[in-house]
Image 1 (cartoon, rainbow, N blue to C red):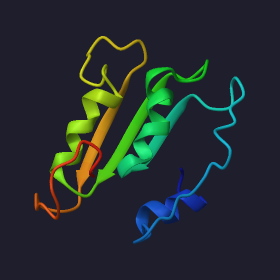
Image 2: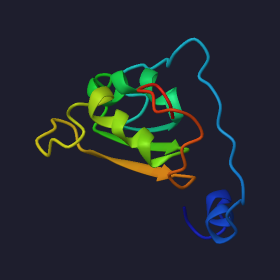
Image 3: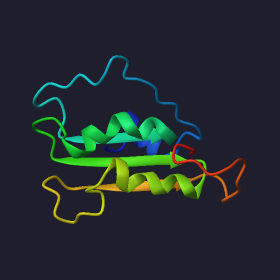
Length: 115
């Protein structure tokens, strides 16, 4: 990311919007393909990524998770989906960042599957 590189331009003038989609049909990793994972999920989209957080592919040395939810109540899912999320003794380092986009407002009766 040196001066004059394409990534230097992105850092100095970051985009206002980033769109991410896929993978379709599941992640395709080969050993040595990458050393770290950035997992990005919204709402219930965390469920399929939970396995990659718990058991990343061989050769992965770090896992970062970004989870965006609509309500603070949805954060209660975290211990159920990622029981080791608060365990400081993980074999592979990483972090979890949770972003809540709305205030706690009940739009309907509470449900364990509501996000």
